[in-house]
Length: 88
Image (cartoon, rainbow, N blue to C red; front, side):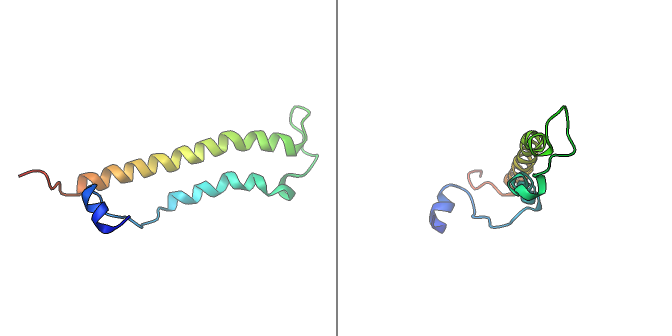
């Protein structure tokens, strides 16, 4: 996207990174199998490998929801701070 396209859309290209994005790495920890490949401790008769996988599903949802919420707040704050070019 060129600068001119960004101007037409009323947006300026932003390349700032938020520290909230680091939360997106948490669900990837479930892919590191040696950390979870244990029989003990068992929870409800399930080996650690299985119950830890079940645990990471809601944990991943919460992490992604937090990042999306932070990104939306940041975008709304940027829109409020930006002067609107259409008003006279």
